[in-house]
Amino acid sequence: MNSGQTVFAQLMGWLPRHQFQRCVRRYRGNHRVRSFSCYDQFLCMAFAQLTYRESLRDIETCLRALGSKRYHAGLRSLVRRSTLADANEHRDWRIYADFAQVLIARARRLYAQDEFGVALQETAYAFDSTTIDLCLALFPWAHFRRHKGAVKLHTLLDLRGGIPCFVHISHGKMHDVLALDQLVIEPGAFYILDRGYIDFVRLLAFTRGMAFFITRAKKNLDCTRQASRVVDPALGLRSDQTIRLNGPKTALEYPDPLRRIHYRHPETGRRLIFLTNNFTLPAVTIAALYKCRWQVELFFKWIKQHLRIKAFFGTSENAVKTQVWIAISVYVLVAIVRKELGLERSLYEILQVLSVTLFEKTPIFQALSPSSPQLEQSDDHKQLWLFNF
Image 1 (tube, rainbow, N blue to C red):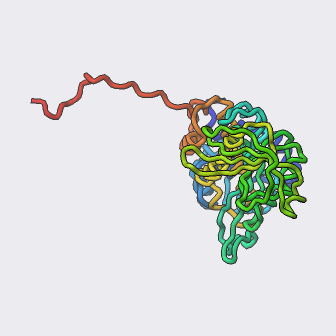
Image 2 (tube, helix red, strand yellow):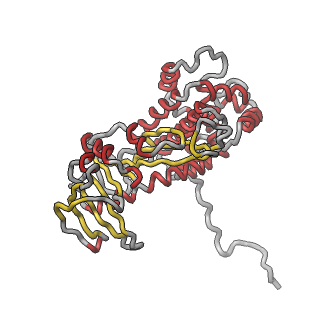
């Protein structure tokens, strides 16, 4: 990268501009736009994400204070909060959703060979949702409770690299199970689901799609044991069975056999019962895969803490979805740069460094690399003694 550019300009230089413009043309995002283009909107929102801005006025004030640095960062026009608010309100959020998918595909290729704690050749996904509370008076479209609004982020996380490869944004009342209908099932992949996603009609769709699921069984599961396998109690395994469902409804919804694994955590003593349609992996590997589901919970916690998705810059559904998708794009872009530059820092550390160095004219690799440790001073270094008589 050119050392004469700001860190922000170098970071945005990793964006595939031609593919961004293709997304803009697909939804006519720049139709009748004279000065503030969709790319300018993306840069402003990315700036807000990386520097932790809290409002439109906050964004406007900080960008005005930058002066000539704003121009060198790629923002050619003076940004007013009314202009940014109108852009978030009216420009199709699908522009940024489609562009996020472009970045996600690139990031998944970079992290395809990464380890995630389980020796598995196939792709493994964790699927879950998180709720973001909203004020119903300001967001009347986001129905959740009688006097409360919310939106849900239904996310499919690729465990290799922690890359969100599918995100569906809905109002808070949408049941989590319905989000499974939005998934495009990948043959041979593993889908790790919480117990709340047990719906045998939808689970059968994974089996018919030649994919595997791992979930937890409910306590009232009505089934018949057909076969048992030998297990090693030293690994925490209690049983490994082949079962069929007995319920008059569930037996019709899922007529195929299932695998039921009883596992007791060696340290905590907690008992877990897993259901899966995979009969080849060792039982202890199934338990280890389900443990990896916690990564999606950590992802939700991470983005809520470090990206601006709890305080929104607009109140319309389009503005909220635009902000969420740009936040995801920024997350994935930082993950791409981290991998491309071979950085050892975590994403958290990189974001913290970027927040204070965005407009420094320093090579981005130098800005994000850990500084060299200071040499330890020898014990005989000259200094004043407190009690020196």
